[in-house]
Image (cartoon, rainbow, N blue to C red; front, side, top):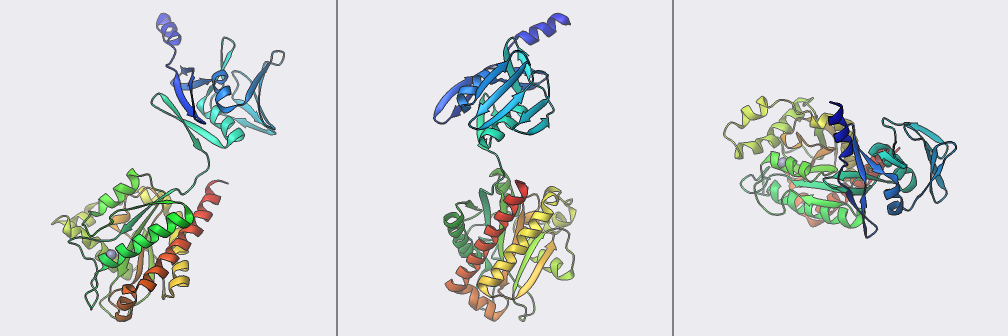
Length: 358
Ligand SMILES: [Zn+2]
């Protein structure tokens, strides 16, 4: 048993490659108790900090510009400037070389450079710390054989929402520098779960599903925002049923599918964010497009289920209302709606990033 342990200890892990500031380096590492420890000596030239050892106190002092950090080998405490942190793993001396575990290294890099690294295969990837909204999936509802709502004068929801989604994409990319991905950029049918899957696969930070509303009564008009949660009112359930009806183009037993699928937990983690996102979108759309405030509502939209990010379904205006249909067809109103969405996303982005990076 002992010999096995010694052999395991002597097998040093392969060097990890890191590319930083246009240069490539190889970093010695050790695997101790399944955790990766990296050589401080090897990391020093990469990030341009200095390491000196006080042989009397057995402390290591790291310096970068005006900042310094103190490490004690075999000790989970680390001093960053005036702040002392107790970390889950200690640094380890191997000979005269100090190896730091990844969580400790990330505290060091965050304090010095506002950066972190992660291990991907045999590579170390450097990334900025701090949560940012960098990518948004924009989903124009319906498409192809699924027209969505149809206005009294024959306007299709799928056509209007595609136009608005394209405008929104352009605005957000140019004004906020945030990448937008459309679930469809032409008149094609895409199953609802594939839209969410795309957002998850792309690791999008927000998901916006854009729709136009419809009701039996032609009187209804105005803007509603929805986030995912069991429908609270009869009205919300009616809108939910209509939007979920897209499923009938996918599967003959769509009603069973909607009822039978268990409540997906993915969105529950983002309820507060999705609620705030909906509120900010609604407020700014009302301001820029001058529509009637019909509130933020909760419903169980299939297209929002399973989205692992803050998500909102926008019902911009009623196609079943004659004035609403007329307005929705105009470029001017489409632009006003897109401007409202841009402003709502901008305000949410600021709120979210400030909150997440506290
Ligand atoms: Zn729709």
